[in-house]
Image 1 (cartoon, rainbow, N blue to C red):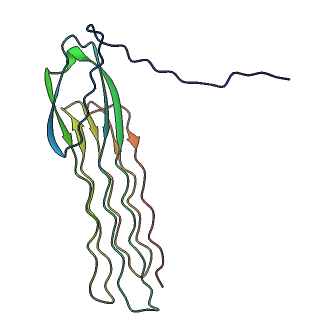
Image 2 (cartoon, rainbow, N blue to C red; image 1 turned 45 degrees about the horizontal axis):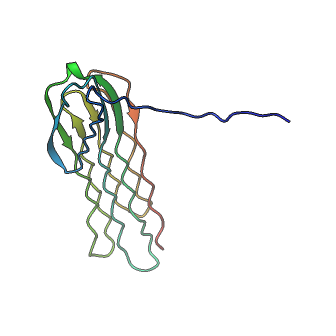
Image 3 (cartoon, rainbow, N blue to C red; image 1 turned 90 degrees about the horizontal axis):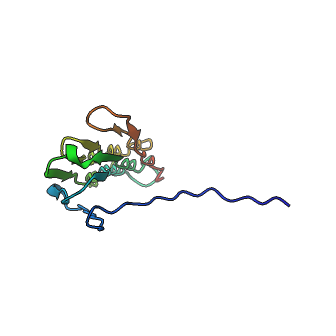
Length: 172
């Protein structure tokens, strides 16, 4: 009989000099202000770009080829741990708005509308998470999915890709 210990990951956040962790979460779209906690040694930043909007479907008569629009791509996630001393006392955190879905069609034999790109999310001039791409409108063929995009540390660190949306399906 063999015994093994499963792999585990453990993370420990060390509190600052006051013994307290300071977690600041920003969800309101637009500009927000992050304030560096007094005595902070390290600052860990997680950003998520907003998702792209999906495309609307083609409108057509029953029995005609009419496909749904493609889904919007997911927003990029970026993460970095900074030495707090390099950051300003305050930094602007910009939260991007989600992409709008393509407007519905009201006239037969009309292709669907594209969605819009999701907004970027940033932490000062230090870190960026790009919003997801839009899904295309449906036609006589499936709307294409919002493609993956990349983003990175604004100084040129390694990029990471986001997720792509799904393709539209046949509505006949």
